[in-house]
Amino acid sequence: MWIVAKIKNNNAEIFKKEFLKKFSDEKVVFYEPKFICTTYFKGKKILKKKSLLENYMFCKHETFKKINLNSLKFTKGLSFFLDGCVYSQESINNFINNCRSHEDNSGFIQNSFFKIIVDTKGKFISGPFKNLVFNIIKKNNNNLKISIGKFFFTVSDKIKYIYRPV
Figure: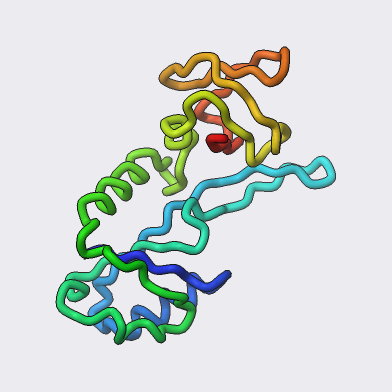
């Protein structure tokens, strides 16, 4: 069974380590979808790894069905567990499978994931066009045709510039 944990800022590794201590068989599975964000600083290209869900992480273990999660709420690095995970297993599995289907060989989410949720307008959150809003003219299999003001561009799924819906 999957549960969703909200992690305190920058404590993901501490949480994982402490959580694994509570389950000695180490059959706990963690899933935290990440993407690579390209930024520029003083003309240099910098690649940053960012979590898609910010401070949320999926955890899976067979005993989650049987135990009371309140016994785990004082795990170091944990803020809280989301309620209702028992009833949302199908949705959680669908989301995780969708994320995994859009990962590259390194396990990072590709732009094809974001293209699904962007309908008419988007905003770049990385790269040289950071914070610019664009209109989608046409969606293709491997790219988007967009306009920024009176300029037209084609954005390939292979680039590392991340965008989101507006």
